[in-house]
Length: 275
Image (cartoon, rainbow, N blue to C red; front, side, top):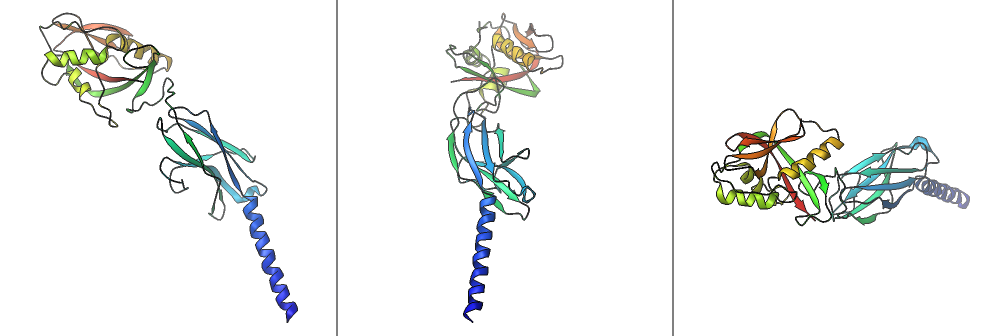
């Protein structure tokens, strides 16, 4: 009788060690994120891979407001037959705290999580990054009084007039002057103009959009050229006027500015400057 109980005890003990061994075998580890920027970071992790046939997916879960789970936001990575894997995410928000942890999903459907690490994004935007307003960072100027980062958001499909026919406002041509120009325009012009549409935008809680100056649009053209972004033959209003009846537009197909009658209707690209 005692021998039978001893055999049962040994069997249970063996099952315990097998379970522990499996748990240890598939342990996931989260390593410190690297290359952290405003919108992106590279995650790294490891998953013990002594029985490769049991692990069907590896990756990372991440969240800004809680301990992340697979059922929440996660990305799958490729481990290339090794224990290590990494993934660069590009949908983060600037100046935000995040939690991240690696995971290994097994063939039986269970998820093995790694340790949770916390990191914070910064304000280190790069050209082409998604800005806080949902636009694209197209120009960076450390010394511009209006703001270091320039963000552009094309408002395609609708057209507007410049307004103020018969009034020479004398708005500026230089980069960073779009906000001042736009406020000058609506101080004189009435109606739904290109400037008033941009100033009236509120996206992601941000309402500091404006109609760009002609030089802002030239810098935007340089960015588009560097990324092989093309437009059809159409013009966009700037906030720079030429005389009482004409103002500058920019044509991205021909990389050149033009003077157009202020009553004409053209599309606009809203921009904002920020630090």
